[in-house]
Structures are given as structure tokens and as C-alpha cells.
Image (cartoon, rainbow, N blue to C red; front, top):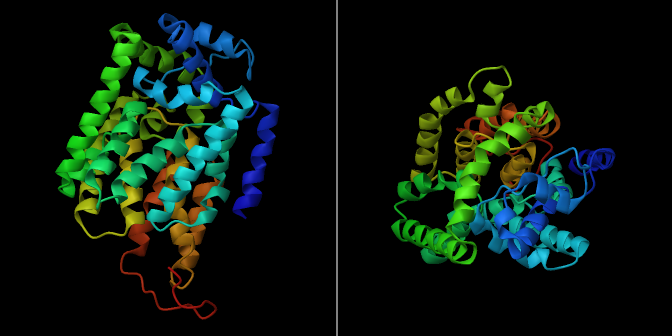
Amino acid sequence: MLAVVSLGFVSLFRIQAPGADYSCFWAGAKVALGHPGRLYDFDYVTALQGWPLGPAALRPFIYPPSALFAFIPFAALPYWIGYLGWVLATGALFVWAGLKVGGKWWVCLAPSAALVAYCGQATFLLGGLVTAAMMWRSRPLAAGVLLGIAAAIKPQLVLIAVVALIAQRRWRTVLAAGFTGAALCLAATLVWGPQAWIDWFAAVPRFQEKVIFANGALVADAVTPYAEVAKHGVNGAWAYLLLPFAAAWVWIAHASEADPADRSIALFTGALVATPYAMNYELALFAPAATFYLSRIGDRRWPIYAAVIVAHMVLPRTFWSVVLVAILPLLRRGASDQPLGFAPALVD
């Protein structure tokens, strides 16, 4: 069923070519190497791509300068080879990390994962880095390096991971993450100058105004409470009232002996609550935990898990999709692992 639903993304051919988001990374890296002063010039970066949505649609590079270190190696390759290499390399990292939280190899069949691969987004890279960092407790310094790299690429999506690390008293990982992130930011400053950071800070609100909230279709596909509130004409900042509750949930989940999949759900839910804008492809962050629940065929509540996950993956992708997957740990609390009449014993 997951594979069949994922094939539905073939319809995107009518709207955009494969790699539409990767093209922004590719163009940003090209500009950084040739004309770094125009890195956050939305029109220039869009014109450099020349496609896939035509000149009327802005396709800017909006990641911080420190993220360029991840994109430049792939941009040095011919475009289609770089796109394929990006998807395969980051996808392999994502699947490997997903296995660490109890996910299954067929996470790559999830519709949200198919969307990430089609668009060439950075979700596989970020999800893989953060998930591996949170699971790699036996190697605190290496875990910190992974988290620091993720923070240098998309800081707003991983800041709440610090709450989880403090809850687990992983001080060496916190220090290693901070040092790694600072080192990458310093390196970017030495290469592209402090003006690149000034331009980036100025570009973020301009991006939200001219690209995101000026496009009703993009706002409709956003999966954060901020965007959900903004859809109804209310100041999205009201959604930040949820942040203390999300942080508390992350703390409780990581301070306890909760399963890795449940800690992963709490962490990424908190990350999306703390982020003003995140598109539907970010739902792939929950795919490993979803496959963990789908594999619990010996649990008496498996039909409920399956129904919730199907709704999460098939219904229109909004913040309510996040709410659906977030209730899975609550449904499981106190669940019996006694086998169903038609199922073998628990196969975790």
C-alpha cells in the first residue's frame, strides 16, 4: 500500500521536474563558488536554474552559509548525477539511522520518503544526522559532531535536540555539537565573509514573505502549527504557546526509558512546533517510527496503529498529520503484546 501511494507522486511531473528543490542547493553552491555576493539574490539564483517551474516562480537558496559545505561536493558533479548521488547518499544515511530507532528497511516506500526523493530535499540528510546522533550514546563526541553538522545546515529544525540531550545528561555531546556547529560557521565566515551571514539573516523574512506566505498552495502544504494558525488569518506567533508543552514532552520522553521510536516522535514533533515553516516532505522524519509501529503485528492494538498511520500518510498533509503520528506513543501506553489470533508472536 505504501508503494502504491508513493507512485501517486508521478503526478508531480505535471507541476515540476524531479529535483526541483535540489536545484536550489545546486544553484546556491554554484553562486557561492562564482559570485558569493549574490548568494541570497532570489532572482539571480532562480535565473541560474532556468527551471523547473519557469522564471515566474522564485527558487532561492535560503540555507545558511555553513550549509554550503554539504551541497558543494554534489554541485561539482553534472546536474543529474549530482541529484541522483544526493538522493542515494542521504537516503542511505536516513535508512541506516532509521533502523537504529526500530524502523524497517521498507521505510523508503513511505509516501513522505518518496516525496523527499522526488524533490531532492535535505530531509534525509537532516533526519539521518539527528536520528543517528540521538541514538549514538556510546560515542558522545561522534554524536555531537553529527548534530553540529545538522545544526549548521538547518538550525531551526534541531535546536530542540539540546533539550533532549540535557534530559539525558549527555554533556559531552552538547559540547561537541556546539563546537562543531561553531567551527562550521567560522569556516563559512572565513570563506565567504561575514556579509554572507548578514545577507542570510535579511533573506529569511524576505523568503517567508515573498515565497511562502505569498503562495497559498505552499502554506496549505506546510506542517507546522505556526502555518496552521496563519492559514486562518491569525498571527502564526500564537502557535509558539505550544512550545513549552512540546519541550516538556521532549524532556520527559528522553529522560525516561521510552523506546527509541517514541523518543524520535517526541523530538521531531517538538522540532516542528518550534519551526515557523516546514513543508509536507518533513513528515518523512516520522517514517522510521511509523514503520516500527506497523511492524508490531503481534500487538492487540496493531489495527489502531495501522489506521492512524494510514491516515497520517494518506490524508492531506498538514500539522494534523503530525498530531496523528504524535498520538501513537499514547495509544501504545499500557498496550498488551499478547498475540492477535491471526498473527504470530511479537516480531520486533
